Length: 241
Image 1 (cartoon, rainbow, N blue to C red):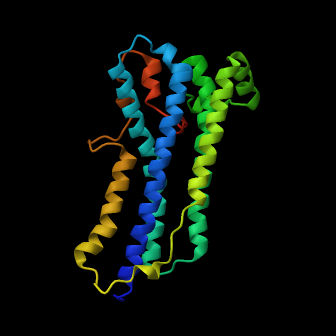
Image 2 (image 1 turned 120 degrees about the horizontal axis):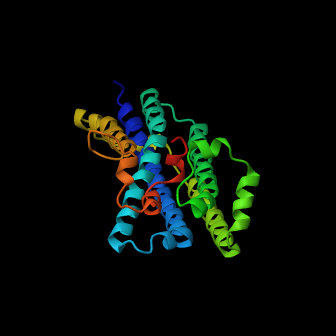
C-alpha cells in the first residue's frame, strides 16, 4: 500500500466531515421550515394538544429530516472512498459536490413551499398522488384562498432559507489532500475507522433509527391529531408515499 494512501484517506474524512456539517445545517433549516409551517398553519389545528406532544412532533421531525440527508450522503460516501483509493482529487469533483447539494437544497425548498399551501388547506402533507396531478395553477388557487400575510411570510422565509443554504454551499472550502501529510503512518485501526465509521453513521441516519425496522409513518403517529402527526414529517419524505 503506498504510504501516501493514508493522506488521501484522511482527506476523504475531512471532506466527509465538511459535507456532514453542511447537512446538519440544512437539517436546522428544515426545522425552521417546520416551525414556520406550524406557526402559520399548524398552530390553529393543534391548539388543544399539549406542549410536550408538540415538542415531540418537532423531535420526530428532526429524525425524518436527518433521514433525508442520510440518503443524500450515501452516493457521496462511495465517491469519496473511490477518490481516496485512487488518490485523485481534481477540483471539478469539489464543484460536483457543491452542485449536488445545491440542486438537492433547491428541490427541498421548492417541495416545502408547494407543500405548505396544501397543508394549510388540508392539515396534511402532499403525497405522490397529489404531486402527480399538480399544476402551478393549483398552487396559485390555494395561495389566493389564504390570508396574504401567510403567503408573504412563508414566501420570504423560503427565499431566505434557500439563499442561506446556497451561501453555505458556495462557502465550502475543501483544501488540498496533500496538506494532510503527517510523519505518523496510519494504523489498521485508523484505516478501519475512517472507512467503516462514516458508513455506519450514514446508514443509521438513512434508517432514522437503530431499531430493526427503519423510520416509517408509524413513528410519526404520536397523538390522535392528524395535523400534529403530519408536522413530524416533511415534504421530501412524503413525496413518494
